[in-house]
Amino acid sequence: MNAAISELAKWDSFCVIVGSAAGALIGLQFVVMTLIAGRTTNPTPEAGSAFATPTIVHFSVVLLLCSLLRAPWREMAVVASVLGAIGLIGVLYSVFVTWRMRKQTAYKPEFEDWFFHSMTPLAAYAILAASGIAAPAYTHEALFGVAGAILLLLFTGIHNAWDAAAWHVLVRGPAEQAGKTSRKDTPP
Image (cartoon, rainbow, N blue to C red; front, side):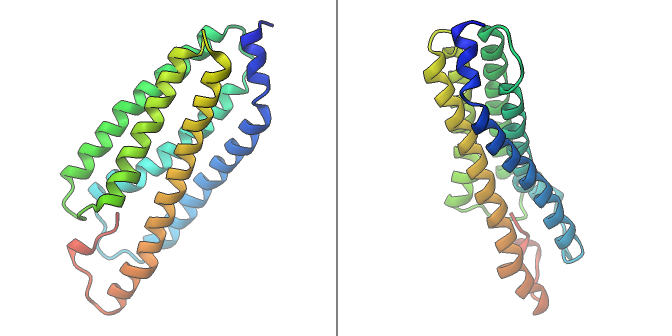
């Protein structure tokens, strides 16, 4: 086993803990969606694809990355290529999500929405792509970049999931009970 691959073994506990958290949060998101499905009187698929779906994608990427980092790789160049490819695909996906956010008319995003649904995922995926490029030559440092990207995606997903759940409970629920729900009151 070469020295670069042995660096991956040092991240086993990190991957188990963070990957398990991502898996649990994916399951929790399904539970939340099921619970609010009956309450929503005016569902908007375009808002869901701009705000809800990306949260599941980010949690899934965290789970995927943690799983891949624990695989028995033989060459760091292959690992680096996979990390770089996932990072580049994530950058493209983040741009696509930003386009969806701009296109949808159900909800007017505020700065916090742009920051957590567009900017932080874009930054995380860019860090992941750069880490993939750097990994063959600077494995130790690049793995810290990968870990940072993973944590940024995880915490962004947690923020976005909480924000959506809180919106449904604190804003949408009272508006529905008062009979004041309109198309502009649709959740992020």
